[in-house]
Image (tube, rainbow, N blue to C red; front, side, top):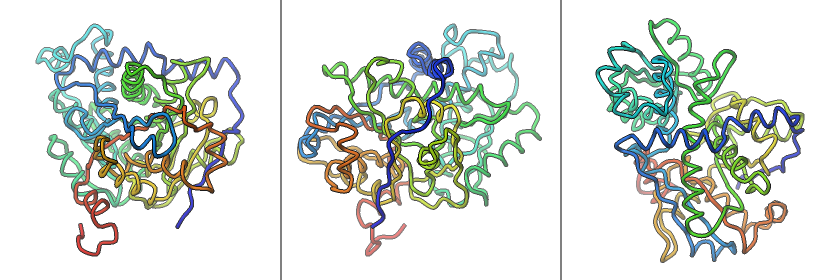
Length: 408
């Protein structure tokens, strides 16, 4: 069995002024601004924070709390929090308006469509982000083109097409698919790229996406506060890093004097942040190739720089996980201990639950457990970022991982 790899954060920190500037991107005020927008969306409801009290007792911790994003906007994933907010911010900017002055009805009105004209939104995705962007574009009566990396799920492709987008699977890995998408957008009149990573000259929209993602952390924090607790630890998965960076940034701002310890968890086939942390020189590292992992939403080899800057200053540790870790998490959440709620968590959603379990029971991870001060007082938030977005594969992992009876 492949081992979980980890390292504590020994990366050189940014100087104080830069650290504060980077952290300010995910201020509590900016996150609340994003939530104010989302609250105007008819489909908006807070997703549940599921308390797994029986599991917490078995693992020897004070509490395990799973933010269940399978309920978000009926899309089975958190991703629309970022894509929809970025599109709304873009539209508001075109109209020279403050986002807080506009409601969802304003954005979807015929008057707004007449003023901004026809736009084509482009994005690259493993599935969930593209579905969220396509959903938002359809709500606004706009076009959407989505490209997916090779090996992407046909089920996720079909879900994107159901939202009215033009979508296809490419022959490239995720990062090269982003480059292809950007090139296609350049050829298209009145096109806008909605991508949750940045490059030179493309920083504003990724920042808006990350701020939209922060609503998930804000909700989870307030829900835990309502139970009388504050988080001591946050375990969050990273692909390109925008979602993990949003959680890291929010909690660093909310609890500046005593922030929860954040573990950044990646698929070992695409562990660019872990490798960057191992190098410990402050520079990001890139993972290339096919990045074969069932954690499709985390198969991103080029880190989002703003997220990396946030992790450098604030993350407690970086963790690289083989596929068995997320498979463990999927099965545990699907068949919980009696009295705990069930959470349907997909391949990219369950890795933090699997890692938390391994951390508390495996002898070879004892050093990390002690370094993170995981004990009976710990209140740990983990994020289940997607439900069964590929139902066939989800069922095979949960029912028959060896494929002895069922095959997808």
